[in-house]
Figure 1: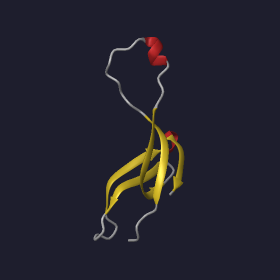
Figure 2: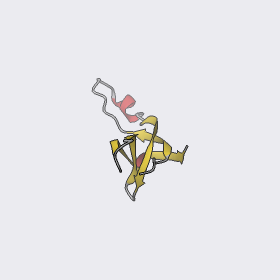
Figure 3: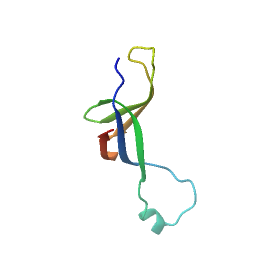
Length: 79
């Protein structure tokens, strides 16, 4: 397998906060915005698939699959 291309994905992540809060603060909550760099594996109608590692001696071997749904993606581009 040839090495996949590297992509940068800017996206808004969901999160949970277990601290106490008031309703006014809760209404102003926004996503945690992230920039993730990884090996591009695939995309489909649901989102984009990245991997953090590609095995050097294993055909089609990748590790740490990450899936980001399209609804969370703000922008992505090849490096």
